Image: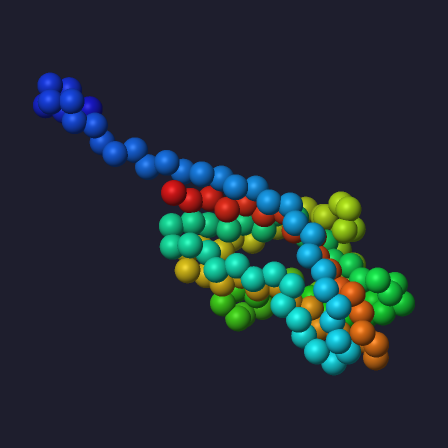
Length: 133
């Protein structure tokens, strides 16, 4: 703060930053031969979304290898999370992953594809933070 600022009581506008931490569990029935969007978030212009933990699951253990989960940024798969066919973590205990950042304006989508021959419940567990002002 300069001398004139002190004399005239001028204060710089302080930007308030917030951090919102979420731990969510999402699942739905995915019809055989289709892809379903399990999570979709459009990041506000002055915010950042950070995926920190992830788990995927199904109600039919024998179907592993016939299902695919994908994490996409603006429609583009993010390696190594663009072709997940194995189990990562558990629905009750998601696994730490390399932080994945989505900047303002980005679209984060997590989808699931079922090619098992039967309808399945497919789900994800996410821990993420949204930071911004």
